[in-house]
Amino acid sequence: MFTRKGRAIDNIPLSSAALHQHIKRAAYQAGFCWRHSLRKQQEPQPPSSLGWKRNKGGMWEPFCTTLQQASESCAELIRCGCKVKMAAEDVASVLKQL
Image (cartoon, helix red, strand yellow):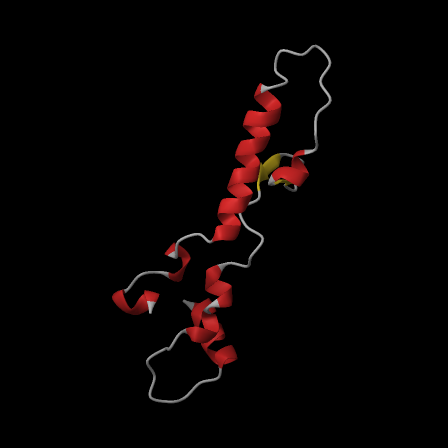
């Protein structure tokens, strides 16, 4: 498994869903921003449909993926190495303490 060699779960490579969001952001920048940069009257398309979201301060930031983080979704697959069998919820609570 990924964590056998001491690697952190947060370092798992990104998924195809993250690639899809990145492509949408790149298409927004190249296709809309640069194409309309010389127009006097611009009709901006909302970035929220193209891989961006507003943060609490009202600024736009990249929306990385539509999937949950790997550390959350893979917690049930991790073995803690204990001699006692543990339920997936117990393993997840141990990981949160680390």
